[in-house]
Image 1 (tube, rainbow, N blue to C red):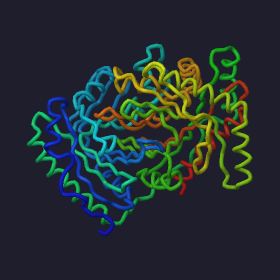
Image 2: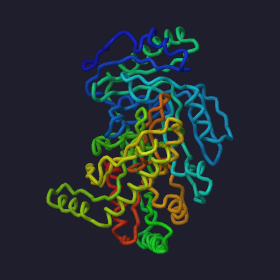
Image 3: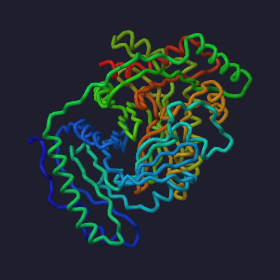
Image 4: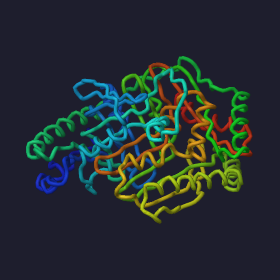
Length: 491
């Protein structure tokens, strides 16, 4: 069992420290840490995966992103579809609520509100999971979707968690966290000590065992929904709307459908090798599961600081130095790519401005290169200070869905995408990550992903259509963006 040891016997914060928060917060977090060098995260994900509802989330390449999170036995499993919210508690008791989701989720975050401790991870409990692209319809009344939804893709899938396991990559610590009600703090603290020690012992046993993942089996090959000719027709329709002045840009997607059998964990394992610096997701809720290696942040909130990192403009990397240098130069000097990028940076600034203190929205870095294993993007960084009167759901809804996955102007682009695609996107173009009880937030954009309902699997990718788009190039971009996920399935 070499490589890890108990760092400290005492929990942090101490009971005395937590008791000072009793009058101000309904809940507080307490944690136990283990020093673990080079944690094999897949062992934990595999173990928790066997207990049905679970999630693994690794943050992106920014201030909040130096952690991985593991969820097991959430307090609530929440699914929303067409206005009906299905809630299942940790005793497997289910109920259906017809409720406004913004109000419901905000009330949950307030009910379990807790202080932020610098020494603990940004997520110590809260809501974690995904919001689908179609979640938009709940807060933009002028948007309606008319797509087919044969796989019953949800409008969101979330877990409400009072227990979290986090891995601090910088300090190589596994942090076991339990949230306590301050109304009965002394008893809760004693019980947490027992719970966390029991969890610690379970984890040490799991980490001492070899990892044996069952391979995922591809039953049918992935096939793109639209042929090149059909896709070209869609591009032509989008460009007609651009020439008429309805929109400046639209993201047209082309999903790849196939049949898979088994857990998606081996795909996650390969994606973590192929795209080590991306956000990573493994999510399982009932018969739906998803994996992702997304390069793009939707929004982060660290105390009062908000940040967005729009990616727009893409080139495939071949691994051949001279070819790649030529493609990168072409990307950085392309008037089309730069115009598209600048348009989406402006959209990102406007989105953040809705929930920020006046005059604080700034583009910190503009049109720099963001490299991944198989692809390179143009990226920018936008920062602001949040309006303290705004809730986390207000911030999410101000920036969602990302302009880089819808278009500009955003509302009209979303309406036209609905007319052109005729099929629910679900997690693609949506967002995944966490909204913490302490007010922190880290959300990635739902791209470079694979989701599966029973055996029906989908890899969805898209391309930005502008006035001078060439349909064959945009079709190829959809193929390029799917390469890393398809390769992970095959390998």
